[in-house]
Length: 304
Ligand SMILES: C[S@@+](CC[C@H](N)C(=O)[O-])C[C@H]1O[C@@H](n2cnc3c(N)ncnc32)[C@H](O)[C@@H]1O
Ligand SMILES: [Zn+2]
Picture 1 (cartoon, rainbow, N blue to C red):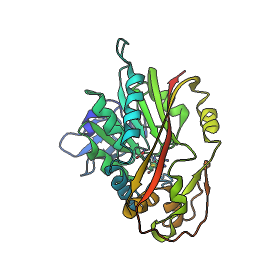
Picture 2 (cartoon, helix red, strand yellow):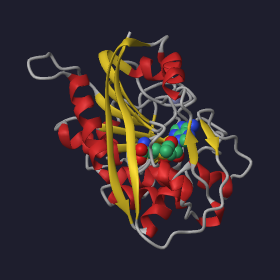
Picture 3 (tube, rainbow, N blue to C red):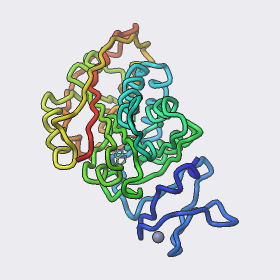
């Protein structure tokens, strides 16, 4: 619920704290800025005219929910939860206080799994897509979901976050470092070049959706981007790789939830992410099940 994270969210206009406005569904700051809590439980804290071109569409969010709901990334969620557990302090270590934040949280799948492993912590799901925030708000009783732009100042108090998760999502290093508590950690999941590689040859997405290849230099660029704010020399990394068998419908969902779907459909004018390269291909839709590789790097970075 949004009330679980009210103590850590901040007014996007003036930076003050937010509290429930008596007698309404809204939350507001002492300066009189108010924000409606949507019927679905999330709150929109976008400061103004945000670029929403990179936000996932309703169809992409639905496809992601179907794919994740089938459990295909469950071992990845486990690895994320383990890394988050180490970030907030393992056995015998003094714990880091604060909430668990997921940036570009999508449906809130990974955040919910991490909260299951960290009883008592509240979770803050941030996403630019209101379709995603709507789902994330329902993903776990301790999640509060907020619509905001990860590339702008985050509407989050400094030092309020014990661990931040970034799973295939935008990485605003200075803002993530600002909101993390001293000793806190950032868990970053990135695909390796083998991740879902087989889908490149068996595209079943709607409207000609295409998968994007993973740039081999991604890791190098990630560390360069984080380096000023996080200690990249002490990153704890693990690799998770396994095969899953997808039905034709699940393979279609995997394509439909990716950036290729966006470029081919509603948002053809959007610039592809800097770390992806489009690969055109014309493989006919497959009718049989497909074995695909899930292959990701999970890294825990400590804030400097
Ligand atoms: C590839 S999805 C990953 C979702 C989730 N982390 C997961 O792994 O299931 C990327 C997410 O980032 C969100 N996103 C894209 N641009 C964003 C921005 N500027 N600020 C916040 N979220 C953004 C999209 O709406 C989408 O939900
Ligand atoms: Zn305000």
